[in-house]
Amino acid sequence: MNEWLQEVIKALNLGEVTQGVSDSDLKAILDGARHAAHQVERPAAPVTTYLMGMAVARGGDIQEISDTIEALAKTWAQKDS
Image (cartoon, rainbow, N blue to C red):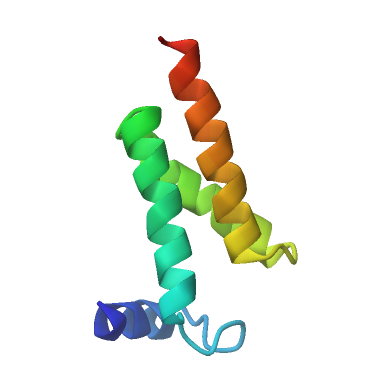
């Protein structure tokens, strides 16, 4: 997957804002997507990861953002119970 991500970074001219995606960053992003998909609904995953990226671009810490998404998704899932 890292090869794909590097190609996307290159294609979108994001090299100046990222040196790539670390394994811990990738895990945080995938965790956020997983929580949105499984505890909210599947289509929420890509939009959630987009919003996570916006929060990171604003200076947020990807792990803290992922943790926030997890907590929010768990709360959301409990609303339906």
